[in-house]
Length: 512
Image (cartoon, rainbow, N blue to C red):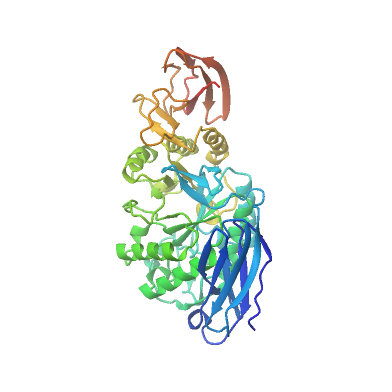
């Protein structure tokens, strides 16, 4: 009954899973516990395990180093501590480890490879049919997206009145046949008609989400998990403090050993009226205590931005604060919070009735370039009307817009940045200028690299002067048409002719 099953080899930043049989009667989620201690030459990690159904208990571990490891598994149902060992091999191709904060405002994988976030939102793509999930993954594979926000709980909202493929708890949902586009708000945040056991998880639900996380990992995409949200008709947003904490501990035990996981405590936390600041701070404390791998952590707002200066928050996940101004506020937030600014919701490209979901592809792309040139990281979403109410923003599937096709060029330009990322530089009122992020106290009068973005402005030329000696290679970028034209090398005062069209950028790079 106590024999351990595990792999003898796993790559660095891969996942070792140790499982064993145990009691299945009663409520194993509550009645029993299991944990492991994993020891290598450079680290010792203690982590909780979880019950996975059918009498199976699991403990997961992500080795951060290469070499030999040993481990010890203890559980209340084991007669004695069980031990084992395995070897952590070099990371495979495409495996750079978890993403970390780098140089205060930016990101890099743990192996030092720079990471420039190009995100999208697809709230419940993971809870759709196998066919649609496969379609979503194919769409992601053909895109520049390297991060996707999505939920663990199902979502109840306009265009989201159907049932998910599974639920996180054992029980039964309310009768959704009564829902219409006119009355769905009346069922938001309610508990009537639902019958759930909040102390008995449905492992099938979580196994499926893990399958989605792994599929994203194979594509090199970060899984930004939204742990809680207010768009709920099942009662999941109304759980008690004890039920919430039980859920958080289970989620961390299951998901934290995946290297591509990020934690978003909530989508639009400020709409969850029965949760207090003390609750959010407690969830953050649980994460800091239980997630041995220190994955990125944040919390997303609707109207009021959370206090992102809190030490448990690694980066800012922000929704636009004005119907017009979005990326323009990145400078202010960088200065205020001194953390990476991720604009996870700068409105969505689409044509639905809601003001947050009907900007043009041109405006979405403009907001992306402006956020990037101000030293932030933009996020996409798409909400085009569909006769079957299948909108990318929630369901995934295929993309119908224009902006996403143009993000690869932006990502390529971001990857050309000398150093670890961009920062804003004030040069004039009529251009957005980005330069490489400088260390504290480092202020080079003439930079090695400039990226000028002219947004909706349409200059027919621009004059530049930095000094008399430095030679710069100049490229003109049409961000919408996706062209890059090398104009040659210049020094001193020089003029760059432009087409007098919107969405142009000029890259000025010191010639080696």
